[in-house]
Every structure is written in C-alpha cells, then in structure tokens.
Length: 111
Image (cartoon, rainbow, N blue to C red):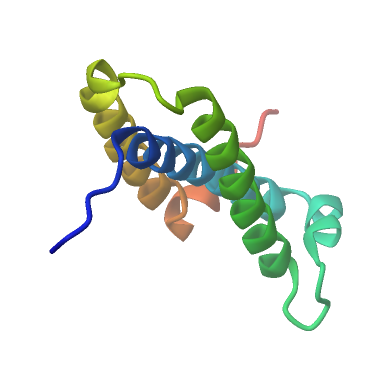
C-alpha cells in the first residue's frame, strides 16, 4: 500500500524548491560578475565558489521549506495547487535559462 503525502507538505516543498532555484540563479550571476562575492562563496578553496553556491541553495531550501511548512500546516491549500505548480514550472525554466553560460556571461558596457 502506497502512503500519500499530505498536501501542505507537498506544496511547501514545491514552494521551497521554487524559491531556492530563484536564489541559486541569482547567486550564480552574482558570483560570476563579482570577484569579491566569488571569494565570499569559496567555502572550500579547492572547489571554489561552487561550494558556497551549493551551501546557499541547500540551506535556503531547508529554511524556506520549514517556514512554508509551519505556515501551511493543517490548512486547506487546494486553492494554491495551480499557482504553486505554475510558479514551480516558471522557476525551473528561468533557472535553466539563466544558468546557461551564453546568458549569464553577456556583458553590457555603458559608455
């Protein structure tokens, strides 16, 4: 017999993943653009700023999931299903587009 996941848990995970993806691509652009931020994100020097990016993304997911779980526990969230799904889908697409090197390496020079 398969056990079902409660709706509030599933939606809080989807929201946390969506926001974590947004945080990840923004941090990726900042690390690429600023050497100071890249040095700040270098938790493990052998790996470089990628270690900080992973740590930020994982910690933001955990914090956002717990926050969303506390806010959604025991509530009827059936009206949030479709909005959460579309926000998740847009977040995945935006993450995929914004982490492509052809996109985040584009520089704009103002003269």
